[in-house]
Image (tube, rainbow, N blue to C red):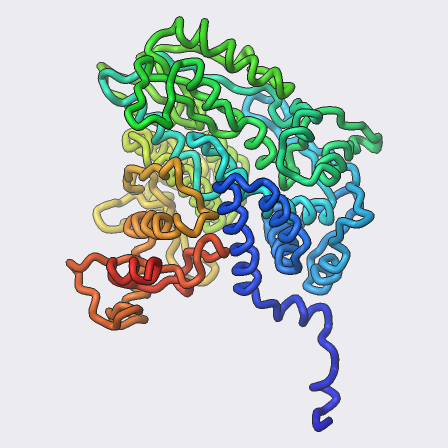
Length: 549
């Protein structure tokens, strides 16, 4: 051999992990997931099961599972064993032990996080190995859940979010002849009380793996407690299991209301609609009696079969003129006009958080204070930017200004108002009271103003769209184009510059009035992301030619 010792040396664990071709991994996993979707749509249950086995035993899926677990927000939090996969070598070594043979789930570490009502929510933190095994089987389960799930279920689902659920509420309640009565329900302890026997009997998942996760138990204050019901909050696969358990609620309610949506000219005289986000359920109807006497018992019976029940304190039947809160928004009609605004509870929480950041840390650097406030305000504002929120945004801006003025006076009790204003509040354009500072990198930094966030109508996702289905790829690309118009104009400019204004497919110029699209080099169903390096600008007809030949 004519190679040096360095050339012939075997790769280390770190090098093996760092040199992984992740695009190939995503393509492999995405292709298997697409085949699962196709088999589910064809009702080939045996084929589905075999493809699931193939996916959960594939090397690519194991790589992706470890990557997802370690790169998630909770990837640095250990389980009861204290083990952390915080290096490339540890990730690679963990990959080699990700086998089903001889696998037994460890008990969960119980922690408690505060809730908005003052109570504490129990969370179960699995070990990293258990999380990786759950993530691996979730890869095989999610394509099924997305294909068979309820159309108006929006929680913990890919390419769906709270804004889609709120927009659906607007769609079914905005007209003058829309349903005027609303059942706003919450499933009590949804994760904690799901019946194990029901899950083992009905869920399309390896029974041995599911049973070991459900019966793992948890350790609280050094004591082991068995689990006889529920799926733990904090488990990677738990949200998907919860959605599968609750899927079918929409069909049961439609049947009770005499609605058959599969017919071509189906009718819904009682205006019955179900909107669900995780364990929060909204049901609409034209009469209170319909909700109270017909639909509510149906829902309770559906949940009881699965070991669940509605929360008596959080379940209400209200007229739309009185309004109701759903996912941080208040939905109410004012003189037959439906308006969706940030709820008072949501406003209170953001102001309390801002007050805590400002007034409890008087010695904090101004730049650090602005950075933390901007994180809070930008996130809250972006969440509510699809609602009627301009006046509320301005009100919160004013309240935060008062908190900041108090903070300034507290820091400099002997200085004049003019001195304080000159030090902390600058003039930017026509605005003369901009709370500003200089960052550590020497760049000007100013406080975000909520009233400057544009109000944009959210385009609701198609209820039949499936992100794991290759046939739906063009729909999701068009949907992302629409979002890009509003939020990511810099990306478009960058693509235009890189391609010199030419279509990547045909080479012709893309003119301003020409219909254009963005095409993902690696498709969504194969793990492709909406980052500029994975996007190209093409003509709309060229886009169709790429997908359909």
